[in-house]
Image (cartoon, rainbow, N blue to C red; front, side, top):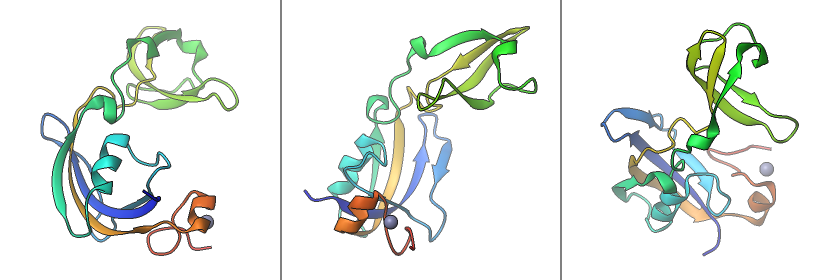
Length: 156
Ligand SMILES: [Zn+2]
């Protein structure tokens, strides 16, 4: 199938039922399929739906933000952090050049700081209530730019 521009409303809930995220009223999320712009498990579902169709689906962690990887958890001395002012949950990037990875602080034990490189939603099965607002083939220009033009996208 050719790349599609899909706009959709969504409400995202985690296993425990709490709402994690949702599109704002009248401001659907818009993306181009086939470019890795949204989680793969959800893209497959949306591609098979038609405008105005609604659906509630649960996406397994491995098709969402990945399974939780213990190998991405590591400890550093507080002197290694980019700032002396920090608290639990703070996020920043580690690494060099184009190999920067986001990490968050998950434990503070004196000078020993635990950093976690997993996505905050890694390991979570996610439930999306979605409604397709609009769907059309992407233009050659949009594909060349890698983003949507016009309503809900880039105006340039
Ligand atoms: Zn553009």
